[in-house]
Every structure is written in C-alpha cells, then in structure tokens.
Length: 437
Length: 75
Image (tube, rainbow over the protein chains, first blue to last red):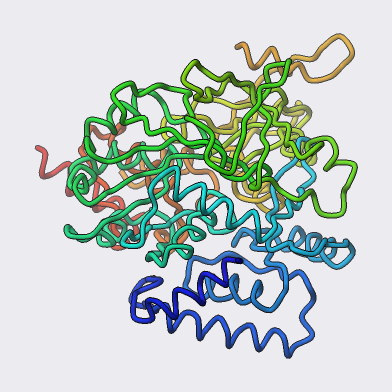
C-alpha cells in the first residue's frame, strides 16, 4: 500500500475526522481525499512532466499538491520556499534530463560534500517503512495531533506527515515557530499532541517561554528532536520541565530514512545515544567505526548519478560519514563526522560551497567557513575572512552578497576578519587546525 | 537609544533590513530569538517569547518602544 492508499482508507473509515489544520482552515479526511483526487485529475489531464518541483510553503495546499502528485503517478520534488531562482531552474533542468526509476515517490534535495546538491530518490515503499518505523518507535497514534512547524521539504518535518496519514491522525501545520503565541494556541489541554524540534527551537522555548512550555506537560505525548545534537544541559532541562513526555533523539537522514530513536526521558538521559534500530532498520558499524544502515527505509539512489550513488549505497547498505558505536543494550551512539560537511540545525552544508561564493565577494582575499559555537543554534557557520589591503570588512555586505547566491541556511551567521587563513604545506586550507582551535 | 539598538541588531542579524515596515514577517524564528537574546543582554531587561508579537516587532521603532517600556517597568 502507498501513502495515498492509506489516505483513501482513512477517508472511508473516518470521513469526518479532522485530517489537517492550518490557520483558520481545516479539512476532514473526506474533504482532503476529495481535494487530492481533484488535483490529481487536473495533473493527469495536463501535460505536467513526471517530476514536479514545487516550493514547500507551510499550508494545507502543500499537503494537497504533494499527495496529488503521487496519486497522479508522478514524483514530488518539494524545494525550500526561499530557494534562489537560479538554483530552482538548475534543479528543474536536472529533473527533465535525468531518468527516474519506477516506484519513486519523492526527490529531496540535500547538499553533498562537494557542495553540488544531490537529489535523493525515495520510493513509495520507503515512505511507508519510515512511517511504520515511527509508529513502532515513537508511538504515533490515531488520536494524536502532530504539530509540524519546520520546513516541509526537509525529511525531519515531511516524514511526520507519513505516520499521521497511515493512522488517520491529525496534522497541524504552522509557519515556523517565530510567533510562540501562535505555537501555543495549537495546543488544547484535553488534546494529545506531539511535535518535532531542531535544537534551536528547544533553546528558544527553554530560554524565553519555559512557563508556557511546562504547561504543555500533560498534553504533550512526545517530542522528537533531530537534525543536530541537542546539548546535554537542554536535554536535562527538558526532562525536568516535561517529566511525563517521551523525548526522542533520532538517527535519520534523507539517504537512510528514519533508523533509530531513543527516549532520553528514561532516567538515564544519555547524550549522544540514538536508541535501538526500528523494525524496518538495521545498523552496522564498519571496521573504520562508521555507521552504516540497511532496511526498507533506504533511499533508492541519487538522481542521475549512479557513480555518486555507489559511493554511499552498495549491497543494499547506506554508508554514512558519522562515527558511532553500539552499546551492550543494542543502542546506537553517535560520535563525530568523517568529512568536512557541517551540520547546521539539520541541514548539511559543504564549507567549500560557501567559500567558493565568498571568494567572489569584492575585497575578500581569502576565507574559510567553519563550524562555531552559537548561543541559540548550538553550532553555526562562521566565515573567517582576510580582506584585501584597500577593502573594508562589512559583515552586512558579505552576508547579503552570499544570501543572493546561496540558500538561506548556507549563509553564515557569524563573521570575523582575520589576518591569514591557516593552510597545509601543499596550500590546502587546514581545516583540522580550525577544528582543534 | 534607537541607533544603539540598530547597531546591535544589525551586527547580530546582518541579513535583516531594520528599516523595513514589515520587520516581523521578514524574520524567522532564529531572528526572533536573536533579537530577544541581544536586547535582554544589552539592556538587562527580561524579555519573553510572549513579547515577540507581530506588533512589538513590526518596525525598529516598535522594538525601541518595547525596550523603553521594559526599562520603565523594571525601574
């Protein structure tokens, strides 16, 4: 069965159950299924191509477009809502030129180690396996309302829609978390809720809204935190604030799907622990100590790039760049990363891509993009720049130049002028020097 | 006061146009958090998420007014 088969089944079983809420709009399962069918019919009657790119706006329309693309037999390609036009056109061109295998439901774009964006192909089978993993691993249920506020083109938020539909639950879509008042209005005391946060969201609520956050203790069934590691101090504070809520750290990526999850509100509250693999997944640690994953949640490959696919996906196994180990209880623990990719709130950024664009900023003579501590985000991108003799350092000018050419999450938050960039004996940037310092 | 706040916030959020009349709609959650954190630290005032309303963060002038109110009430 596909996600859309489950949606049809929900519409038959629970026609009047609220399927989705966004602002003042809400649709029952019967209404959602009808809207999805109508849109799918429109697409079938049109000359729309097999792969359909669209911007992931936080509305009910997103859900309708996404599901109707699947229902019409096409492939959904949700892209970041603020994606620069040049990038959108580049991706649209690649979608037309490349062959997409049968059975593919989605293509999600993520950054590679070289900065070239990679189209991760995800099958209908994978979507259902991810959903079943989340249901078994975290206890999604029919009476649950999942509040989703993160970008729906990212696996972290998109994947939560899947178990909700499988079980006929309710999805409440919010446009980000910037208006905390709107966020808290989504919860009613008698309800049963869950939500997904990146660490910066949790820092925000703990720092500026701890009282209202604590008041959700009885109606928050569980929270999943993902994207980047949550600090241990925040984990402990969350456990105190929400003593009965299940608090999950999860190992997941676009390439592997949802693999393992750990409820750190278990009395142990182990930092770096990501729990046991879920029913459709297996985790194996390679002789080098790196995490590799098997099972039905794996991607089908990278769009139009079998060679790149083979570097990651071989023998039905996805090989990751994260170091890890499995403890005596079978729980996965994560260490650092093998390559230079920087994780910023769940988005992977290749520093070379940022540096390549920064080097074209007038007046910049040399630069390096590194991961630095940030009071809210935990880790953030920092650009160290060497200016030409007659040039003036202006972080505002540099940031705006980069923002015109890169996706927002690739634009560094922090900037510093330095005298020189450390290089190795053969002239390459000495990244290890900055990692240590 | 206004220029001090502008300098602080432009330094913390170099991409944001603080001359905008629709500042709130141009900010993301990280931007909101950064504003609250920067102003709390710089002025020793207690800001909470409930203060981060579209009205309070509509323009630089409305941010200045919010800081002045907080300073007044905490005197």
